[in-house]
Image 1: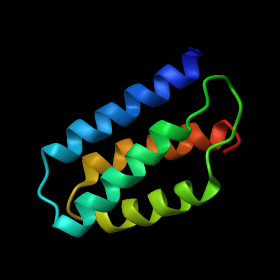
Image 2: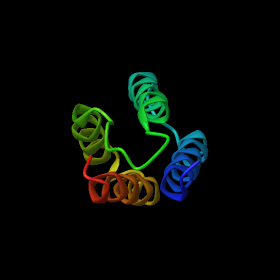
Image 3: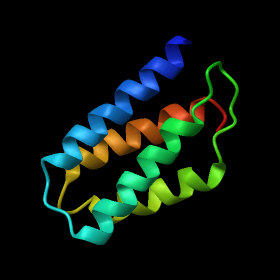
Length: 89
């Protein structure tokens, strides 16, 4: 497993843990869980930027919704977005 893939998976797990500690409405929690699951499935085994680009757009929208109430969680989301962007995803 590439080091980048491991870093992304670790970051996704951190995001999952942070989301478990905050209060979200059911729709928002379901959407974030779906996005995390989709990203975990699509993060390439090697440094091949094949994650569907719409996932980043969706993740950005979700981060915008969380910014006011959960700034620490948004920091993790933004870090994830930056890592994926740096991979060319």
